[in-house]
Amino acid sequence: MNPAVDALAERAIREHWEFAPTAGSRIGRHEYDGRLPDFSAGRVARRVEELHRSLAQLSSLPAEDADETGDDSRMNRLSRSLLEMFLRRELFGLEEMRTLNNNPQRQVGYIGVGSYVQRDYAPLPDRLRSATAVLRQVPDFLNTLDGITDAELGEPIRDMAVEAYRGMASFYNTGLADASTQCAAIAPDVAAEFDAAREIAAVAVADFARRLQDRRVRPEFAIGSDLYRRMLEVGEGVNTPLLDVLSIGQANLEQNLRRLDEAAARFLSQIGAPGKSVREAVAQVAANHPTAEALIPETRAMLEDIRQSLIDHDIITVPSEERCQVTETPSYMRYAFAAMDSPGGLEDVATEAFYYVTPVEPDWTPRQQEEWLTNFNYHTLKVISVHEVYPGHYVHNLHNRHGGGLPLINRVATSYAFTEGWAHYTEEMMLETEYGRDDPALWLTQLLEALVRNCRYLCSLGMHTQGMTVDEATAFFQAHAYMEEHPARREALRGTFDPGYLNYTLGKLMLLKLRQDWRRQEGSAYGLRRFHDAALSWGAPPVPLLRQAMINEPGTEIL
Image 1 (cartoon, rainbow, N blue to C red):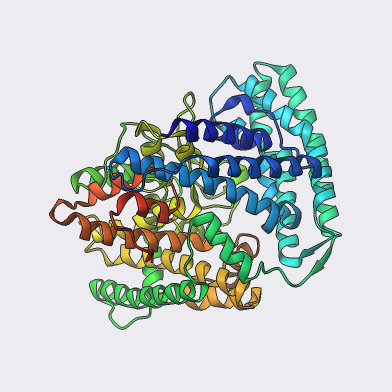
Image 2 (tube, rainbow, N blue to C red):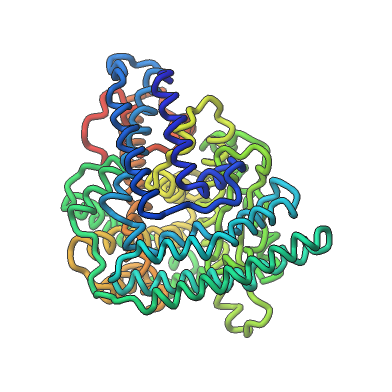
């Protein structure tokens, strides 16, 4: 990398971590442990000045030679562009989107201390000392947040924030109890301080939730077309007109609905029940699932099968013999069916990774347990495991940590659309290979997942740029993703505070287009594994920047 750009990137990243130490801690720089951000108006103003200064300094540096085509030159250009986007994205959030002021739900993650409990990077007493330090800062942090939050909030955004903070208060009270008990056996004084801090913090969080509940609200929550366009431009390097983005998403939804009908018909014919409905096909697939006792061990065995298929079918390099640990989801995360918890990109001590699978609860009725397990039918579990583990998020993390030589900015500045787009892309890609090509039940379940992401894409655009209401978005999920009313409304509500959740499908579509163009460019040298290894060798940059690095004549068409 250009030494001057490299030095500026190092300083800019350190300044970012000083402003948001939680980000430094979670990526693996544990000198930032035990600290919460200062979001006071004065500190935010100084941060804005830092960002403007860094951008001015970057623009004053000589440009990279655009005629150089070697990998080093391409990496230099990409890293410089990535640094600029990294700075502009944060500035956009502070000055234009004003997320700190109008979207308190997005700040709840700062006060989470689950990573100190879960990741074994230091002895438990040391980690709980850091967690205690965070918990002691929570009351002041929330008072500052209360002071900068707008007097009037969009009603669904307010409601989701209240729910999130109430959930965090509950986590403090109950979800941290096991860690305290374990610590008490070896360091009772540390456990006692931890318990006292979490009790005070829980009261502060619950009080903050009450204050949010009492805030004035308005029905409007949309960010509007101008901010939406800027969000895509600054965050993902996407300059496509919004109406074109909308029409591309609509076309993909319609394509996937047709594919779903075809997959259901193939599956029903295969089991000797032609003519039944898609919902009946889904019910047939859902009925075939592990028992409650076998869920974790069967998931573990399934991962080994998928991993071996990546090697046998030459799909992607698996750069390490490391395995993630398949384990039950921690109690405070059991709102999710399954989730991947990979180590931070700069973590060099606790590099274990956890694939959380949420079990049935022992106090559930037999009917509730059966309903839960249908979500873990063997085919859906395969699709989720492809997305989260092989070759989705976990393999992406392995490439970033074992690839070697990536500039710091490439490891720190990650794209929402690339990260989630890659994992979603792998679901569809795996079904194009020998692994899943002839399995209509697997196609059926993957397409149901894709339709949820299609609906996120279109409802995000609809709610924020087209006047769609939450009720209309809920009905849209029900009609097009075969969802019941409650989960459909939850999906719609997420889009009110996370308009970027269109990025699952947006990223997948950009990666599919990149693969198509790279295959044309490489001709007979093209190979699926070669494409995947090349795509992951740059980190997780916005896909348009990746195009500039991988395509000799990238042009302007990214979708």
